[in-house]
Length: 104
Image 1 (cartoon, one colour):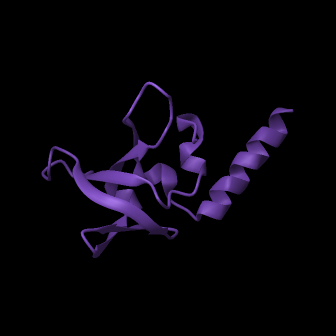
Image 2 (cartoon, helix red, strand yellow; image 1 turned 90 degrees about the vertical axis):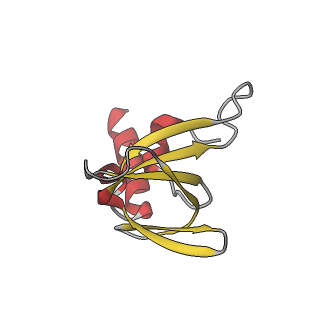
C-alpha cells in the first residue's frame, strides 16, 4: 500500500497510468498509457496491448492509479506533474530518507 503523500518518492514500476501532454494545444483529457514497466531518469516506459511506448517525464502530467489505497475505494487516482518525478528512483528514495532523518 502506497501513501499518496509519498508516491513521488517511490518506484513507479507496476502502476497503471494515464498521461496528458503539458502543451495547451494538445489533448485536453488523459489517455491510457498502460502499465509502467521501466523508469529511467527522464522517461517512463510503458506497455499497453503488447506495445512499448516511452514518455518524457517533464512533458506530461501523469494520473497514476493507486492499488488498494483504502478498503472502500476501488479506484484512487493521483495526478503528478512530470517535473516532480524527474530523476532516478533510487535518488528520490534517498531524498525521502534524508527529509525524514532531518525532521527528528
